[in-house]
Length: 518
Image 1 (tube, one colour):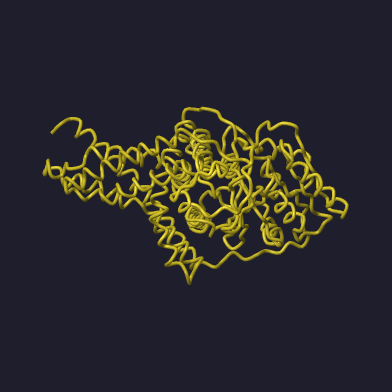
Image 2 (tube, rainbow, N blue to C red):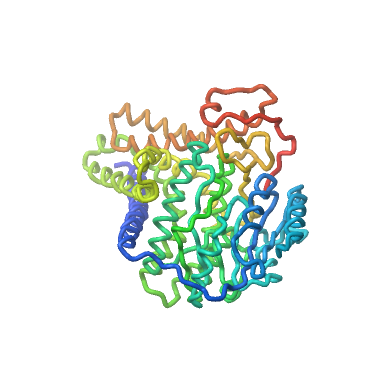
């Protein structure tokens, strides 16, 4: 047998085996969640004397959503003499004018709210939170990103858990303001439901580490300070601080029944930016935290769960490698019958490794008892999407592992709710990336492999390749069309494909001040 073929076959089997283990972990999370549902729900403790709370709102150029955020924050149900609100504003556009006006009106009504402008973005979000903490007066710190809308009773439902002095952070579940906006937002909503409802609940109830998700949570001030405060040496300062705090023996609480809704990215290039930041930040945090974690006096199951949690984004380069290996091996079972069982076992490993669709299905069944079957139709879209975004996220992983520093580039938000709303003609668009061309090249490579498989009547990898091809084609073509066509209505350029991929525009002139949001 040719040495090249042996190399690809061995690599294919090795990668498929690792992906299988991550898939098994998803099955384990689903099992632990199902078991936790038989346990009594967490009761809400009572606090005889409500503590002083500081609400921090870190923002940067949030023209379309800042009014919505401040309105929700200013109407939180909590005693005014024990509530402080900090608007941590690093904006460089007229967002600051909106904030200044609304803060002035709120202060005139007796609300203790401060408009904090640093004059620079040093440390980005971590720097803003750290600066705000320095002058804050609350013993508890609630944090909301600009695209979130905290419900009025948020503090009333979370603060009581801090009656236990060992609790350092309380995280709530994310909801979705624009879930029904498009196929893209529906897929994101289902994936996030799986993470929050299943994974966070399973880890929390089984005594393992969980993470603060950057927003919609409350910290104990002394916990932040004891763990070393916010640090900007990773792009996921929330994950970093979460692990440092839990390694200092602070306990975290996850509340699946307290929901804080937020706006999902409706533009594919914005979603790519968000996912890139999460992937790169997780790799940076893994490099920083994992050596300390492995030496810590923790139970093996806690270390194992934490290892998977910190390394889960590595499935993306593994998926790419599996795709690259699969095409040259087409027809091998027929040409070399002695390796047929080996090749088929590898492929079954790869296919069986997709345990996350089961996890997602479980979350939808729990959250949507009457419509969950219809929602399962989106699972192939989510699987293909996880493959399509693999190139984008793999770049983040490689940069994080190589120690390449980059700015914190936030995800643009446009205040979208219904399908009649649109991001076209608004500010803050993500610029075109040459990575899109690589996605299209991978799509061509995979479809060439599909053609080879059909001609060779080698069907064992065909479903696998179809999902890869669909994912790369969707991500590459939609990114291209949203950049070249959907942002240029003045040019009179129209495309049937573009119309099919996105909701109709609400009208309006194309903004000439498209910004690169960092």
